[in-house]
Image 1 (cartoon, rainbow, N blue to C red):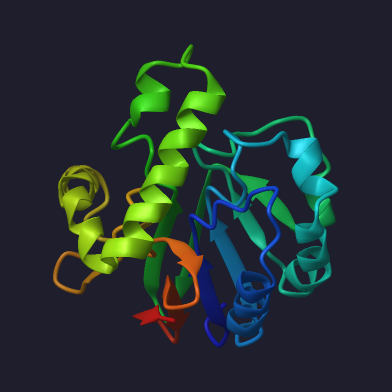
Image 2: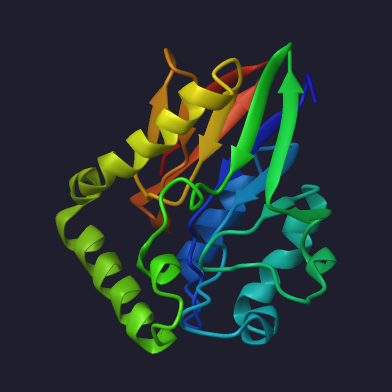
Length: 214
């Protein structure tokens, strides 16, 4: 992968409501890469079943995802189920590691480091959790990216694990929705991909990583 352009995107939280604007933005962003890594929470499991997602309007994305040799990592909103993930990915897994120009990257959604309400209380009804997703989306849309700073402590938990375990590698997460690129500590978070104007992703090329906003 030393000469490839790799994009890492996470936390799209695709719902039953198909958004042409978001669809077009996703296609535009991923067109500019050799390989795509979806780092968790691709679809919103609190609001629909995996079967519903696989047959939804978002299915139109699948050919583009397959074309990019997509690696799909499970998150806490889209945990692993019995499904034909090969419809849109070449690999479906929990973690993924790769190297570019002797630079090592460890990619994982990040829920392990910062268990959220749904993980701490697995018996909570999904409709209630989905209301929380809707409220958060509204707050981000209303206040803007500044709202996401409330999740800075989540990123710090990820960094703490990183320092104690794999400080020689880049740790690349999603989950917290707070995009961050810390060159000194080799930590990156792709943030949330909510809608045009409130979306972010990571680009890795020749061992160098960039945080992009769209």
